[in-house]
Length: 304
Ligand code: 8Y4
Image (tube, rainbow, N blue to C red; front, side, top):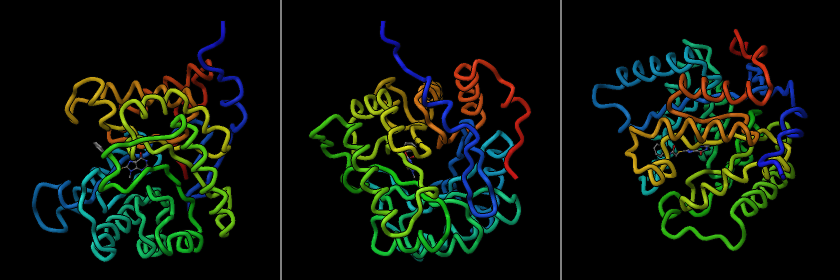
């Protein structure tokens, strides 16, 4: 009988892989968790600017204590139908948070942005990674990313956040479209001077995809291993869970943990999630099975 998954090659080749993220070195020899920190105004109930900053800091501190390797800060809501914000608005939201996370917590900060001005500014403030759901396709973004010196996560997406969920359609198996797009984008980035060792790839769950597309994409996620780059995935609380289980957004944790374990088995290196502590346990458990042991994870210190 054919094995369901052939894990023999994928989980041994890139052991001891390290990613330079500004002053941090991120150890990707085992699966890592990225904690989501939203700084869009709707994420905090009320109060002035410094109250929101304090809340953000405490939330980040908790995620780091729960085992997050990094914090993803986003000032532009990329949810379907969200309003667009100006670069200045985005900078005003994100910059104070990045600055505080770096200064107060010495955190490895990833910034979820498509905006060249934001990329330039946050790299000066000590951010360690750029997470662009538009894969540096905005005018000037590729050049800004190159000069930042930071690693960049390139993500597959069909359409723009405003209309991407209207009638997602693919002319080939979705995982083939995703790998094809990412391979092309990696080549374009390399041609513009963004070196390969600074790139990560992400299949972009929920970005211009039906539930069936998302489920198939996870099932065949090992096809992304052909790109030979670290893989980041974001499925936390997304509608692929809501649609399958019939759960509202606040009841999607168990579904998300199941997906995280499956993603680890299929080679995911970084999991972008809201529920850090629970996900760290789930992925460490999945990883122990793949490794047939737990030595490297027990007492694992966070990165210097
Ligand atoms: C509930 C909560 C329902 C959040 C939906 C959502 C990804 C990402 C987003 C991803 C990478 C989101 C910024 C969408 N998703 N970045 N960002 N990969 N790299 N929706 O999958 O979380 S925002």
